[in-house]
Length: 263
Image 1 (cartoon, rainbow, N blue to C red):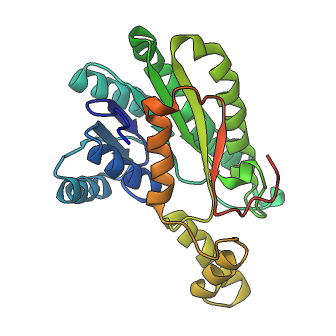
Image 2: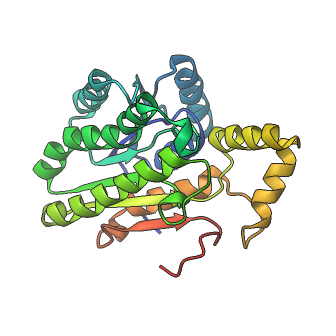
């Protein structure tokens, strides 16, 4: 299937690792012009080199701390100045600190609001004028299975990613007339640095190995395995395609069937 993504300009945040980098790779294979970003310049450089070696195409890079308003403005400006437009925005971010309600003070809540919710709001605000001008656009937010099935000890992620989901649904109703879609991809247990972090924390708390935690995670998934980031990336690319032009306001789980609800 031809996704008609050649020369589309794609901005992906938090894309030096994991799902963001996997999506960048797949967009580059499709012939898109890709901008990757990270708050860590060394990781960003390494990711760009790896992506070029795999795909033969080099992404544009920009350092961007999602909690920094000026960085958010600058990554949008960099993309527009280099390519003249922005067609696709993939809002991705690392997870906020884990913790139960009593573990989290106002500073942790505020940091998570900026990282998870306000980065999406601000980047969307930055790119929408260009999408409206071209009467075409895709906004895709990477959330989590926790928006449908909250995960214990992830109070901040459960709360703020659910806020992103509500934001996306509301926005999709406003800008559908501009031929711009807004969707969320909700990954399940995916082998990213975030999952390694959570597994290490659980293993330490229980006095077992990280590998045992991974086995437990896989055991509750109907497919009995954890996801590769590229499997999530494939859904992102599909939602960005012309073929997905009538899908908007949706949250699509890529979870191996672990979510137990029927909707």
